[in-house]
Image 1 (cartoon, helix red, strand yellow):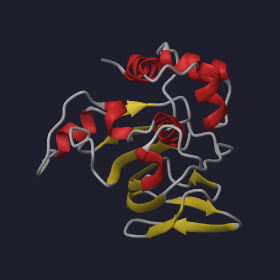
Image 2: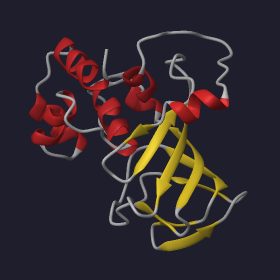
Image 3: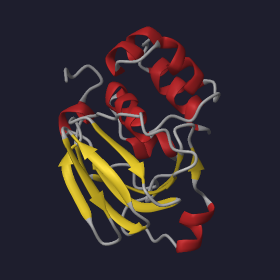
Length: 190
């Protein structure tokens, strides 16, 4: 099952309409419709908002398989299964089979020539970023950091944040958490 169909199915199972979910997420009904119909691949921040609104985890939206225990991912897998978004970056979600995990780890690749540095993100939870290759500027709130391989940031992801690649390509690992309250009930206020 693809991402858009899974979101639509879960929304309909909860007897909720596009307008309700879009309003909770803070974006247009049109955008949610495009996501559900597979016309756009949303950024991770948008997926987190949709998952929160539906009372689930991002990993559940990205995979139908359910496993527990240790999940091994070979480097070839993460590199070959990158999902390209329309926001100028690609991502791979680690351990999506483990739906009830506390962390949501991702590999990101952002290319300078494709990246729109005006994309500002904000979502519930916390975020950890670790730079593998390349350099980028990363702004959290009003503070901008220059990050190189081995550098990291940890911040509350409700703070507005954005990145700008300095080198042609930046590869980094990001780990997101979703607030516990958002995963307990689809009607939990945020």
